[in-house]
Length: 277
Image 1: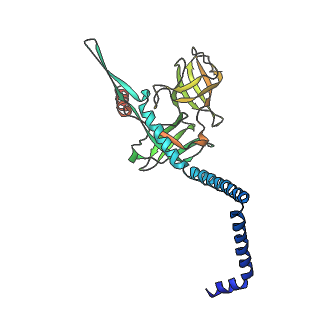
Image 2 (image 1 turned 60 degrees about the vertical axis):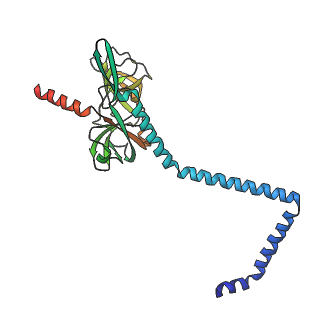
Image 3 (image 1 turned 90 degrees about the vertical axis):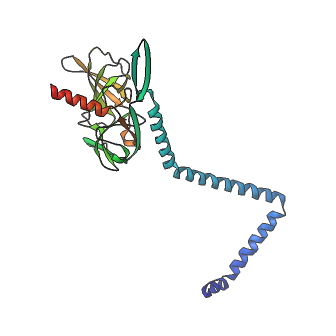
């Protein structure tokens, strides 16, 4: 307190100058209509600019919440798609009783680690066994196919990206449904893959869309990319097509894990078939 009094006493002339200066400005503005209007107008501009910047900062800080909301909404909408259901049809006395039962559900997850510049790339997501994630489940995003789950913890999971030398998924040409398989390109380009072993009768066109087939981990029709070049496999019995991938793996933030409710039953039946062969 003593130091404050000493400071004020030392600079009392300066403080008196400030008091008189602000008092004179206030009187000048208050009793002159033009200056008053100009002051109010200037104040409104400064206040408006300040509010604009504050609002922009608030919007920026709210992006995480908005992204979470949009990701959850995308998962909810995917659960309602027709491709997420299968038809259970009972024919009796020429009456078809068709009931749509849900085959696919989706769990939204956030990407917390990702790589794209290695020969074997993986993605870490913030969902695990507690949220119903299991090994072998497919993973997609709003742009298309991402990969499959290979390791599952209680709270986290590891996804083997499409950008992995061992990744291979059943795929087809969207127009004529000719089936092959998609894999990453040998030159490790994160934007390029190959659709291989497609029938030589397919007659694909540049720019034609490549999507998941019914024999994959995913519902049929999930985008993979577009044909960007054509190559004929040695012998001429099948076609290999260069595909421009739909997903930009460097910008992945949210993904959807595909839960196929019939996957376990299918795996059990196929395992029994192999045992009997």
